[in-house]
Image (tube, rainbow, N blue to C red; front, side, top):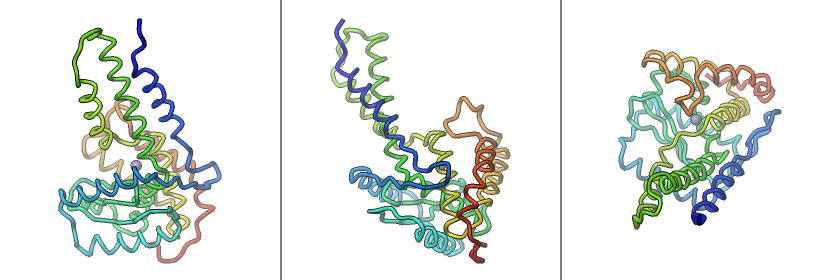
Length: 264
Ligand SMILES: [Zn+2]
């Protein structure tokens, strides 16, 4: 039996995927920024430009003013070398936000149905920014490539031993490349971003306990939408699990909090 040439490559990539998870926050709340490499940064910036062309941008000051105000305060406490921070509001009814490597952050207008003050907005932006500063996209990329390689190996090993399909590996790999950008962050990354986001909020003078309120409101929203899928079907943590984890972490986050009097 010959060793498939992809085996060492997939093992190496999966190893990289696990090695790539470098904790970005410790138990004391000390945050370590992991700036993305040039390739990830350029990719993030390109993707953001494409999204800006594809989706409608909102210039409604009811949304853009609080976003710019909160973003400015958060940026003062976050140092990420090479970041080109940009915060854009998209006309989209789903209550979502996202961050891409290089400091590009998108916020949907639908979020403002659930949040009505700057502190809750700081909880959203703190969480999203931390995906960027912890370089979660790079870890996700290695995970995606590793999974694609394992998929190709399984395909070869199960049914198609000896079959020659020139180009099929390349096609599968390219398909995986497209999928990687749509992969959600892992539960581990979500919990990490919740903790980092709470510290960023506190350092910028926003009460981090409001992050718990944010997730309560999102949980209510998900319930209204028909509830969440069972835990084993989801990559995202269950709302109640992340609320419990945030409550547990809150004494640490509160150490960084000095009320500024302008949080609301
Ligand atoms: Zn997240």
